[in-house]
Image (cartoon, rainbow, N blue to C red; front, side):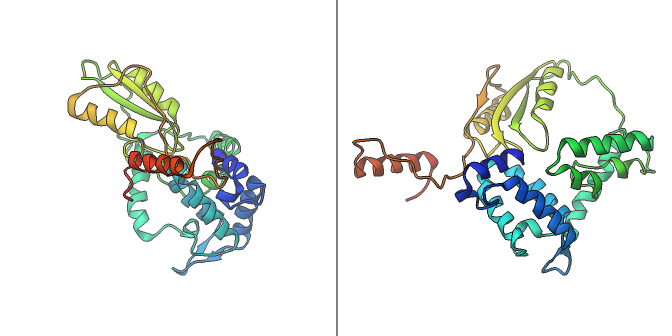
Length: 276
């Protein structure tokens, strides 16, 4: 989220949000929505938590969605409830989220001491000031903010397997990690690849969650692995994330003719697989 707002500040015309200070605008928007929630078409209300909930899922798409996020934040500023960031969780969402709470509560051990729990929750909220407070003190989400719920969990704690995680004797195991993943941190992918006896890390230098289908490089590597059990060379990095468009047109190099420019554009479209 921080890198997205940096981009908004660097390219305000494309982002369309923040009027030169997107961080301050974002904090003000959250506070305004909490103080005066926006009525939604479904009869509910959208507040700061709603905004964070939607950002949490949509920012997983990576840089390609950044312009759409900017537009949706601008709509939210205008209290336009057609912004996809102002849609509260639907009833169907809880069919997905509720089982996830059960999984989280049985998979992890959370502090039972209320004082320790409070310190950890407040510390995490402080370390992530843009989205952290709403997540820390709001209802649990997918893979996020289960501590305050799970310490009250009365179900049987059955998933306490504590190793080994080496997968000794396995075939090669491909581990893919995004450097800017907001959901499964890159350092966790690095740690997992080292923990496995036959792990091989592929790094995708990109924002967002997952790489298959978002990177030709990573998709080819994953396909080769799944079909032929071939893993990429150690240290392989993919860096072909789709970048957001820029509102600043690039000047043509001196001596470039209109025909040359047109040929260059057509060449790029061919590489992207775009039909003209």
